[in-house]
Length: 107
Image (cartoon, rainbow, N blue to C red; front, side):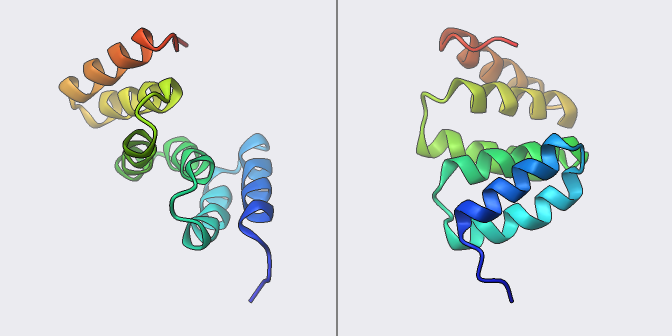
């Protein structure tokens, strides 16, 4: 087993995301989340990895945790809205897109 810190795993996961390897990123970021489950930067990156690999329900779970921990995170609301669209949950999609917009985050 590796002795990589959560930070090192986060950086490695982000590198996988940047090189368009979301499934590999998710594997690494899941390990980081086990070490630091309340670290929103890890959960946000893991949400992106899940989203980019088509695992929208898992992505929504991660972004919801970020929003629960930091309700003013406009990016997480935006991502949660996008997950709602992919999952066919119109209420979730509209609600979080609106919150993101009110917080100044629009993509």
